[in-house]
Length: 72
Image (cartoon, rainbow, N blue to C red):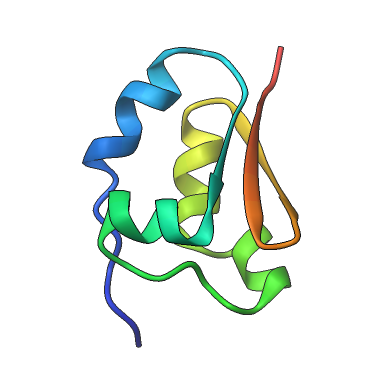
């Protein structure tokens, strides 16, 4: 099991209620953990996918850049 992400620095982004994107490097810098490598796990079962859903976002990945889309 890899290093557990710390989402504290992502909370202001979630609380802004706007779409945002993070590259792999940005995600690692903000959370202290690498982005999960397996796409299906990243989108459905990862801690970041669950945290995004808790805040009303759906996670999308394009070329290893995560985009958080606010659900209306």
